[in-house]
Length: 208
Image 1 (cartoon, rainbow, N blue to C red):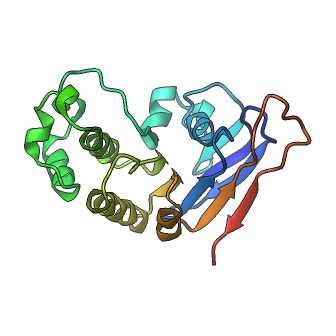
Image 2 (image 1 turned 90 degrees about the vertical axis):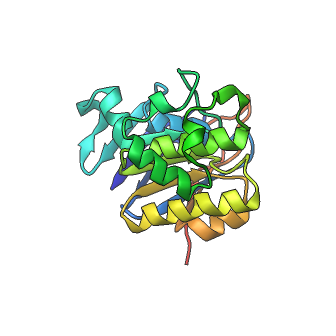
């Protein structure tokens, strides 16, 4: 279980909620409401106040690297530190299996990343995030650059991970995707330079 306790994200009221293993929580809200910032805060990529627990262990009990191995943030446009994807995968055989399921092939590991399409890089980054089986996935617009066929492949993999007990938090502009994947939704209120304690509180909606 991922537990968020009084997490302070920008001008939003402190957030407290839980995501069980095998459950998918959709983070919704207008542009600028803090959706991506919230995912980054949970991943300990940005400084914030409040506590985050995984299976009862507070993240401050781990190094940042140890935490992010278990609570994996997947950006819409991931960063790469090598010219090809292969060096980013410790388990190349596992990478091959994932790539096939995502509509790619082994050649994508060795092609220069800067000649690949945004959608190809997005699926490679998704495979990279899954390769060592983290128990929590924080997905920020995971299919924003994909056509319908590729999107369906990614969603199939997300559903398989949910069935395997992975907890998923997802930000998506696709309301139909949210309906297909999520068990509950966290609605964030709008933010502005004038936002204050009177700003709308976040609302957790559990789907039927």
